[in-house]
Length: 192
Image: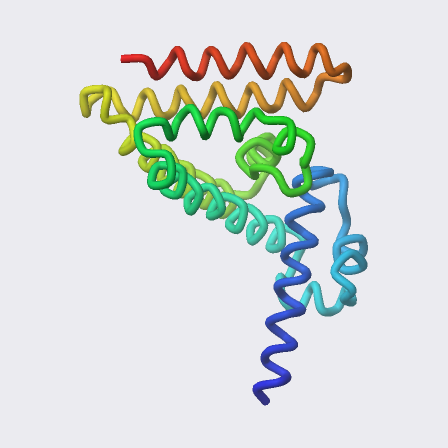
């Protein structure tokens, strides 16, 4: 029984990882159930047994991706202290993160999909993004308390929008130009 449960959990995890990579890289419409199952070395039947539908898998992938940010922000704050925002900006717009769409931040790759998602998915997104903004706000002690959350939302908007544009650009000079401009704008926003 334990062996079967472990195998079932491993299959679910593999499908979720494949769904997460597929949705981030190709969008909701750009990947199908069969493609996700194949990437996970699973059957379409196993996919449906674990997630019920493509929407269910998308919601689970969104949950996973936003939890990565929820876990990551406090880690940056802890590891970099007062310089955490500079380190976060450099990471977020850095080449490795920019180029790795399939494993990059779900805020950037999945946010455009949410406008067309069902209410349950949008509710999940709202809740997780509120948590992320609150975590960022806690790390903006250079501002009065009543300004921290607004600064956090603006910071997120600059980074998400900037990474979206940088990823859409085709030539390295344009990509680097956008990335550098957004890095500067994000840092300038947080100067007290």
